[in-house]
Length: 345
Image 1 (cartoon, rainbow, N blue to C red):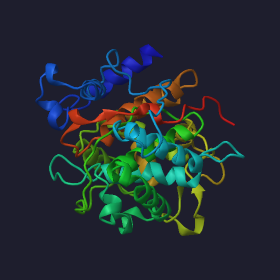
Image 2: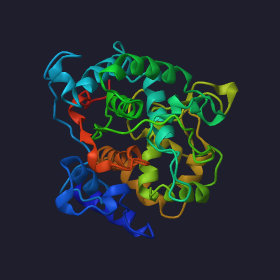
Image 3: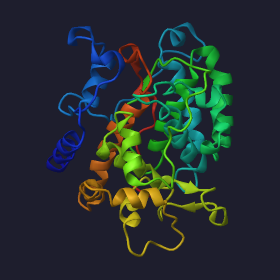
C-alpha cells in the first residue's frame, strides 16, 4: 500500500500549480509556534504522511466528568464525546449494521458548509452558517432538511456546554463516515467560530457540471484533482432525490449503506448494476485527463479501500478547515469518534 499511496501523493503534488497549499495562519506561523493540532493539520495539508496520518483508528477519549461538570467544562473535547454518542446512535442502523439516511445527509452537510469558501471570493467555509444563516433552504442544499433539523436540536442541547455549530456540522460528517462499515476515521478538530452571515452562492458543485469546471472550482478551494476524486467517493453512500425525481432514492452505487469502493468501479462501468443512478458530473470527472490514475488506485482490489480511506481523510481534513483563520488554535478530539467498522455486514 505504501508504494501506491506514495504514488498518489506525488501525483497530486505534480498536478497543482502552487504545490500542496497551506491555509490561514499555518502559512505564516514558524514551526516553533505551532500547537499540537496546528502541527498535525499542517503535516496533513502538506501530505507529509511520515509526520501525521489523516486517520486515527485507535485513540479513544474518556470524558473527565459528566456533561456539565466542572471537569467536563474545562476540557474542550468533553462535550463532543456526548454529542458523538448521540450522533452515532442515529447514523448506523442497529439491525442492518449499515449507515443511515441521516448519516448520508450529515456527510453532505459538512461538505456544503465548508465548501462555500474560495481563495478568490473568500467568505463562507466551515463556520456553521449552513444552519445558522439558513443556507440549507437554498436550492443547492435541497435534501438536507432532516439533518439540519437534527443538528439544530443538538446545538440547542449542547451549545450551553460549549459546542459550536461549526464544530457540530464537521463532527457530524466525520461521525457519519466512520459509522458506515469500512468508513474512515478522519482526524477531527474543534474550536471553529460560528457565523450567521450567509456564505456566497455559486461555490458548490453542480451534478451537471463539466469536469474542467469542477476541477477549477475545487482548485480555488486549494483542493487538487486527487483530493477532489477522493472526496466525491463519498457518493458511495449517497442517494439522489432531486436530480431525477422519478428515481428519487436511487443510490449512486449498489452498496449505499457501506463506505466501499464500489462507486469507483460502477461509475466507469459500461453496465452499472440495475437501479444505480450516476451523476453526469461524476462520469465526466472519471474521464478527465489524469483522473484515471486515481480511479485505478482507489478501486484496486488489493489495497484500494485503504488507499482511498487515506486519501479521503486527508482531503476532508483540508475541507473541514476551509475558512478557519485560526487553525493553530484548534484542538484535536478524534478520540470522541466511534471506532471504525472494518467489515461490511
